[in-house]
Length: 108
Length: 120
Image (cartoon, rainbow over all chains, first blue to last red; front, side, top):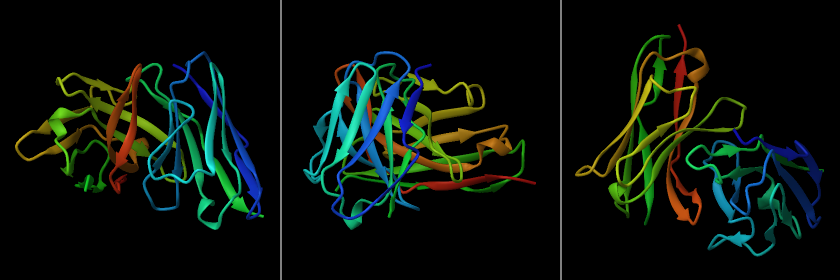
């Protein structure tokens, strides 16, 4: 199984901050990586696919980068609506997809 | 509008069975890859099962032999039959529609989730 490791597990930030979340794969997954945002009691929401492609309707302050084993999700200027938990997901070994453990973005 | 609505969750005793349903609207279930993903309380996301448009099915090792994914084409509904339930199956179960992208597929539409609690 491909293991996905996110860091940090928790991140404290203020509105307007630039925020970066890292996701590392245990083996190369090329660019087959997605990012999701999840708010408490809600379903996940797709933000980024194929490592850097922005899903339609997602604000442009979200961006993704990376390939191989190391990936990042960046929020250029954190907004109040962005406080949530973020998950990466590899789909290189489809159908056996795996998720990272999540990164909670909290208010500082 | 593309929408998924799950139902069928609840409290069940260890060893019991439950069938989850996921009614789709705005698209055709049988023409898409559909999946179940679960989330234990306070934990992360775990893929459970997928059914391809051609009918092939796959399962996580943790549920293989106990869970069965299926669909009813005329009802445009996805199902998850869960047997021999264990305490560790306690989770919110989401159904999700996948979008294909070269090598594989990722989840672009999610239901609201249904809670399954396995406890005596």
